[in-house]
Length: 124
Image 1 (cartoon, rainbow, N blue to C red):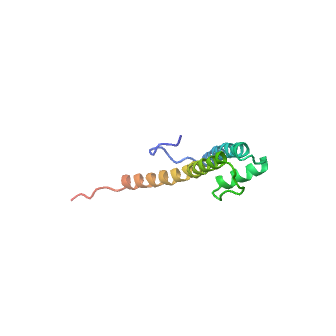
Image 2 (image 1 turned 45 degrees about the vertical axis):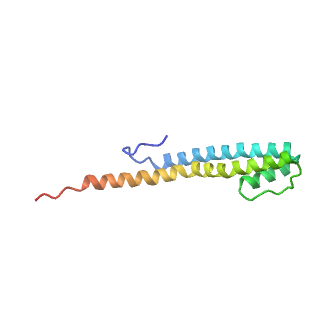
Image 3 (image 1 turned 90 degrees about the vertical axis):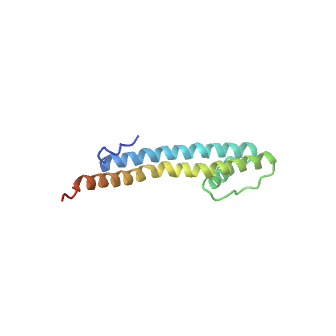
């Protein structure tokens, strides 16, 4: 997916395209996770679509629940969705940050390799 450390650094335009692609993937992941939450809250907690969207959004964003849950099945769903959302949030952040971290590390390795090639051992 990314260039090898011995390859040259990609252009700024290619890097911007890579960032955009990862943003699209992260948004698709977020939409899928939100859809699971909305459907779950609507089915298990009997929330309206708007209330289900609100609760799922708040949980996925790490803010916490809004509506009161009355059934055990709704409470179990909310518990598992909260655990899923916490881990999923980290995954989305990783998808967004991966190109930036890779570019930084790639540039660092290229600079290190150039310095090593430029240094000549001292002869006596």
